[in-house]
Length: 163
Image (cartoon, rainbow, N blue to C red; front, side, top):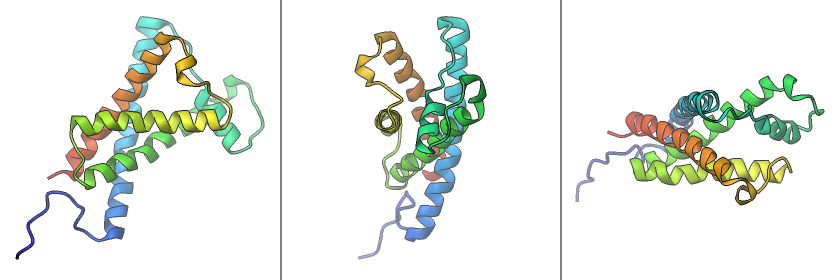
């Protein structure tokens, strides 16, 4: 019986597939974080007047056991954690796409993955609070921004890895 053509990259070698997932996942994740950052700034400036969050910087500080610094000195750490997490999480979405899990429903599921990564790191390091203890408006804002990240990341991964 002849092998049928597969529309995903799953039929390629393991190392080629892993390299492809890392490359495209990181790229798509960085684009997703950029979209999330833009929507966050729009939300802050035009709708909520919410201050910048330094939770990513605090989390990275704890993970790397760095000395505590004032928030004004944490911009670099904040961006490193923010974009680093987005790039690494994008690899998960690329693995999903490579195995045929694509489209809007896959991106919807991936929103939960991104939230899980954030909450695990933030709560494991003692920086964050459990999301159900947050005010409802902050929960909605976080879900909205993580959804933007997930759907933009998913769109790029699906475009690049789908046939």
